[in-house]
Amino acid sequence: MNLDKIFNPKSIAIIGASHEPNTVGLGLAKNCLEGKKLRKIYFVNPFSKKILGQKTYVSIAEIKGNIDLAIIAVPAKIVPQICRECVIKKVGGIIIISAGFAEVGKQGEELQKQIDSVIKNTNIPLIGPNCLGIIKPDMKLNATFAPITPKAGDIAFISQSGALIDSVISQTENENYGFSAVISYGNEAGLTLPDFLEWAVKDTKTKVIVLYIEGLKEGRKFFETAKRISQIKPIIVLKGGKTRQTQQTVSSHTGALAGDNEIYAAMFKQAGIIEVESLQDIFDAAKLLSWQPKCTNGIAIVTNGGGAGVLMADYCSKYGINLPDLSAETEKILNDSKIMHPAWSRINPIDIVGDALSNRYQLTINTILKQKDVYGLVVIQTFQIMTESFKNAQIIVRAKKMWPKKPILTVFMGGKSDKKAIELLEKNKIPNYSDPVRAAKSLKALII
Image (cartoon, rainbow, N blue to C red; front, top):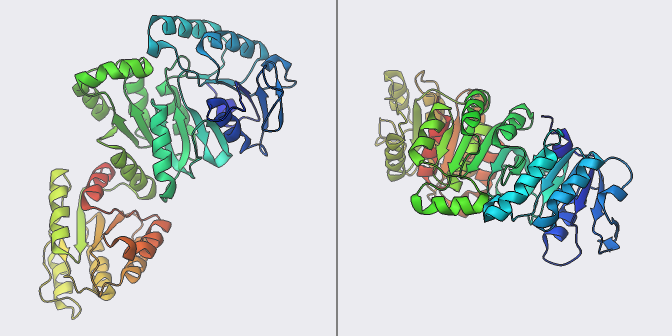
């Protein structure tokens, strides 16, 4: 199904737009007006003459011209009738923000069935009900009531939970990555998760697909779709509702069935989906996958702090990441150099000792990247009084340009002291992590 009228609408009608403070209708109206230079925005509310200084319409039928996208935010009981009006108007797509459907019990289920009946055989794509909506930052499209619009980027975030999206985009406001799309799909009365996967794999802006799911409506279709798409673009998933106690909560949240956690885990693995354990994990991995190439299992660690190197090695062992021994040639080059401290470790992790200046980092990084069975590199920097943080970042950026097929990530642990260095690294698509465990978990997702 073609979703262009949803993700690139030339005209939007907000049915239930409002001027009342702290309402969904006002939030939608304000957000949609952000893109008013790119599309026509219409407000539908029979009880208001103007909203945000703009004329309102009694119904969508009153609007002259075509409507690509209709956004519905009215009480659940009148949503089926509004959908009928949208079908008569021949809108290009519908998003139902309103809650009060399958997630609330039999009465809500009946209303959702009525929506199904209205939309069936119309070929009009429908998102929701009970959803936040969608955001396409590069198109200045925010068809949600989320408090902010995130930065444009190459991560498509598709979530069963709308409120979770609000929290995520707020937390990522100061991050260096952004989103190709943010999609809240709610109860899946129309479009289902596989439909959004099909859209994301074709979207040229999307490099990585990130999912938050609680249950699946079409398990077999999802598996077959995801298995095919994961060969083209990486898919990362965070699964909610893993315990018996939370499975009932899932049912009352979006009307979905959570299912057995072990079955889901096995399915994800067979489909080539990367499963993670937390929101931080999901976006740590997504950033690395969108910025760096995948690689064979064989990683070197360069560190000026022995303890940090040991921790990184422990985490690598835990997550199945191989640390190749130093070759005789690598060890000889470093040993023969007058730059290296006599106490350097001579093993991987390569501890170049706490007093390391940028020349020691440069020699070690360039030497280890030449080793054939080293397919990627983690550079750890603990901040000492003599540490040349910005110079080290410049060295790493140059190394990345010399070895574009070998992923490089960093763990600069100096906090504010490393701010400018980290900005330089991430500007050049070299992700930095504040803790070795975050780096190791992300690497696990990157290794073929």
